[in-house]
Amino acid sequence: MFQLCLFFLVVLLGAAEVRTQADKDIVKYSSFDIAANAIHRRNLKNSDPFYWRVTEALEVLLSSDKARLIKVTAKETTCSGGRTVSPTYVYTSACPLLPNARKFNCFVYYDTENQAIPQVSSACLLYTEIMDKMARIVLKE
Image (cartoon, rainbow, N blue to C red):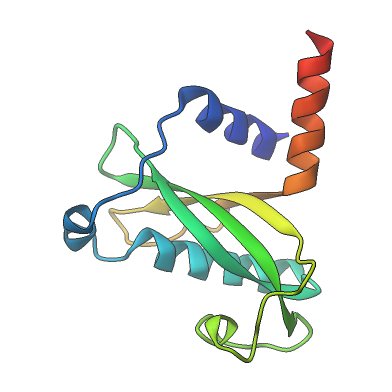
């Protein structure tokens, strides 16, 4: 439920904005790097059947400079989650995307003061689940 509320909050506010290269130079880690590490950690923690690869990372503007919220799109790769691989390995040719890869939409919270991703920091939903829930909301009105 938390993930769905977070997703709709961002959609309704429409505050997503991609950072420019000048903005990235100020920040120690790029949104993509933060997202890739958070998704990799999530894959290991949840024992997902396949590792996910981040295909898009958009930073949502927050009023505080102490935090970053990143909207992430990720897809499954051919690399089995049954073995431990590094985050960078998932982005090599050894781990291509599955032909019919499932798509996931996630949000990652990053604490800029501590330059860390807190333990409870990411929420993900399968893209088809999001579309089903949005369709039900529209149909109720």
